[in-house]
Length: 455
Image 1 (cartoon, helix red, strand yellow):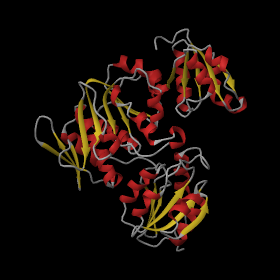
Image 2 (tube, rainbow, N blue to C red):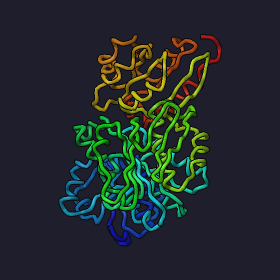
Image 3 (cartoon, rainbow, N blue to C red):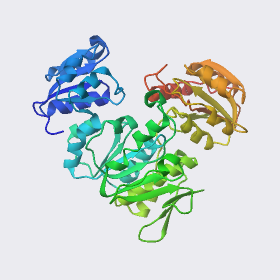
């Protein structure tokens, strides 16, 4: 990508990562144009400092001439690659990269190991847990990327990190060119983002880009029980480590935790018993975090202490309140069907399950085997409510709620002591909320406001 000084850079999409990318480009002496499809008046408040620093704003449109005459396009992950202006740029030979790729030279120059984690489900928990294990052992690290702090913000901070731990989405992987990883992990691939990729095969091919990013001498951790990741292989010169339930894998998930087969011989046992890591899927996430932490120099005892103190990830099977004998769980980050499958398997029931939102095109039928003896009532939400009811409504009584406030009120009226209310939507949030975090925060606030007195 070369130096940014004097280059004409167009930053497309002005969310948090786009703003951070623009600030980094300005710092490095680039001539920056900010571009967003929102009206100018909606964008200006967020970019005042950038305009004062010399950036130009083009809002409400994506002029193809601007894109063709740029030296570099830095696009936000959510912008679809089929955008005509991007196609025009590529046809003119203009490189199109993402914010993470923009930061690749700075990460390489830092000399610190770079870890990349992807997967349809579990990548945020695994990233957060890996970061927690390292931090608890006294390492100074960056943990973020797809969730949390953009990488460009960390680069701008000037901090020196011992390790970079990056959560990478398929969208971010699509926009990489030169980023190199010392350690990588692909947890699983299940149907998701079909509205963007069209087929599971195309989506899986996006995830399969990560292994090639691991440099020789590094290591790659792959799920062995998932068909798509089972078929992946580490590049030449990269150590391959597998996790799953089979006795033959390097990281075996067992009833109370994880057994790690050390390359130098022997088996290390790691209990995984904190509530924040309940469920077999979280023992899988822990297996990956354990392997990454051990390869980054942590001792077995340091890893065990870190596992015992893990506080959990917001919006992922997060217990937010116990009221009148009913536990309320915020699982707003469960934005696809497979993620909800994992969540349901973590509970015995009876469950009051809140489902719906902006669907992604995948069927809800895979959830059906998990309902018997577990889900006692369904509360439908959002744009895909009718489809949820059509595919699952014969399995449990349905409360047609439409919005989250109604669902919380109905569940409060109906749930009995010993039961659990689980918000695990299987859908994106953008029909009614800004993000899954906004949806989860709203759920927390609604539950917190429920009265203590008898219903």
